[in-house]
Amino acid sequence: MTKPTKDIKDFFSAIRVLLTHGLLDKHEIITWADNEILKTDQPDDYLIDLSLMGSKTKNEIYEFVDKLAQYSKTLTAGRALAGLIADKINDRLIDYKKGFEILYCVQRDFNLTELEKNYINHSDDELELAINQVWGDKDEVQDRLKAFLKCYDGFTLDNADSWGELSNEINFKLAHWDKKLV
Image (cartoon, rainbow, N blue to C red; front, side, top):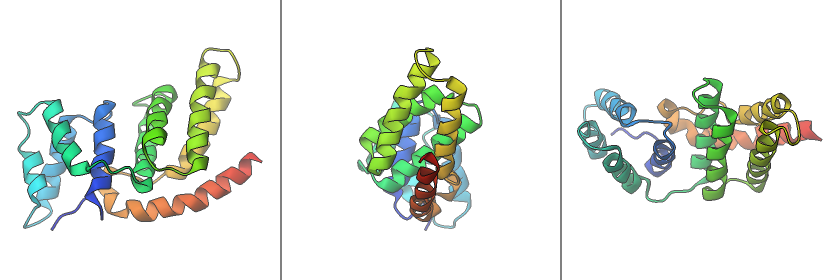
């Protein structure tokens, strides 16, 4: 039986956020489902359903994904999203401003640690001030944000079965990163 993660609710919670913010389109989800079907002799029903949604609208796919997510807002899903968003920033598919606007929503909606929530919240404001040349240097702020996001390296849609372990490693990475700030 194919499972994208030990908890498919985490996986589809991340997919839902990526869809909502335009970081993933319906064709990417369908292609992912098709590839997962090819990896097994007995694919789960949700994979077959997703694979057959080519004629559905983005909203119909979103509703299907939303049911699979079951309102999961776990630490693991939030951290996976931070890693996936960091990859989009690193690949220059979105800029830091857009990335941290989305991360602001993630920190508000998911069960991240207080350190993570506070830093993301503060960074969103700091970046806005630097971009508008009110306070701070945009490049210096982006360098600090890049260092923070480095803690979330490793999350991909293809390794969702490892998200729990990757999330646990972040505690150590954040402790090490936080010491650099002092």
